[in-house]
Figure 1: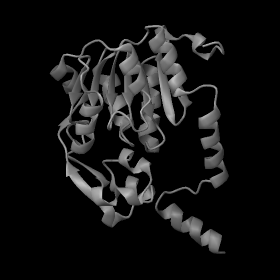
Figure 2: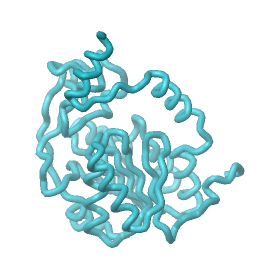
Figure 3: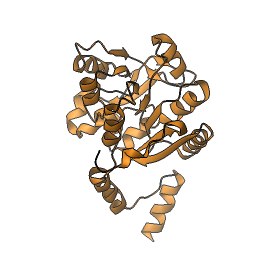
Length: 253
């Protein structure tokens, strides 16, 4: 009886109870899977398929960052975007001395709809795991669902650009990878990019926090734009049809 009541209550708020075993098993797969984001990036960068990139949601350039080592080793031309001031300062420090990087302290949004982001207050960061520095979001519920108490959350105003405005501002016309981690806003950025740009880079973005209706539109637009795509480690890897290369999956990489 109690279980039925709980499920009804959860349903009212459109949440879905997910089996904990499913989550734990997925984490093991992410850690041990033969195919990983790092493996794909290594192949594409090592073989000079990717020479330049845009990273949206670069954070501090270190935490949970799949690109840092490649950017430094291969001297990739980069446009790194991070809206939160504290993270942005750390980002500049962590890439200090490199002349192949452009920095942008803004959020990327559609029609300037993002004017602020929610994050954990500095004085409460040590209460939570290291992951909380990477869950800044345009929705306060995103932090709450990660176990952050509402009283520990603050709102920070941010500058906003569209993806098209970003490219024009920095005259960044040619790049082979668009890498996005925007904690749920990823889908809108990808849609905006596909509809308003003729550039066809590889696209990698985190999809697990995108709402269902937006994700449906994203996958439809990717298909219409002739992209192949598949999930890896909570991300969607999107490859233009003309650039597909199955050698990524060879065991002797």
